[in-house]
Image 1 (cartoon, rainbow, N blue to C red):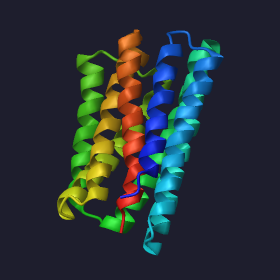
Image 2: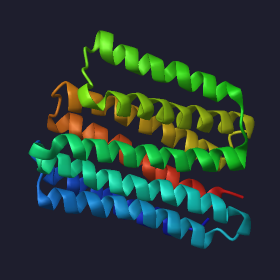
Image 3: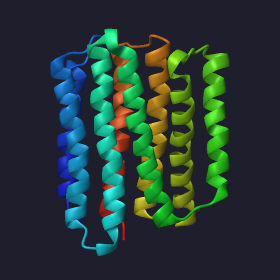
Image 4: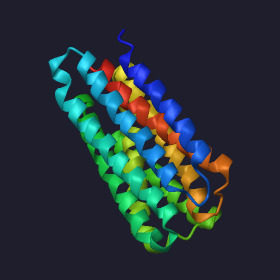
Length: 231
């Protein structure tokens, strides 16, 4: 097995560690730059995985997953600008959420094209998204304010990406690619659950920030590595 994608993943882990050391509640230009490098590296993992995977049938899968990762990179930069420039917090948060939502659409496209459609994950996605929204509003007392529509749409597409990934894993015998996509999507959802606490409940301590980013970057790097095993 070619180790180059894992070497790049290791470099990403180093960059993430440096970012978490630099990142605090107020943010900084240095932290934004380190976060950008960390995000560029998960795109690099996708490219290296594609280069060492000899199967020509993986091209469309690679392109869709990479577009999703690029949207993640854009969202990462925009959301950290929200921290760096709190006076413009709302438009930056809106832009970041839109970028990630579009990224999930690319991931969904890859899942549906390569692993097939079923109503089952769609139904489960609606249930999970509703559960997240209702728990946030009625138990956690979250007020999404001007981001209500963004949050509802994002919750659905994030949930759908996760349920479709899990469906693909089950229906395709837990192949390496589908298993990585399923694990990555679950970690993605967990990172955003933590993010609700950071954005709407002022749980922006260093441990919360670290957990959120570790879950998120683990998700993106794992999703990028799925390209290595797609046949």
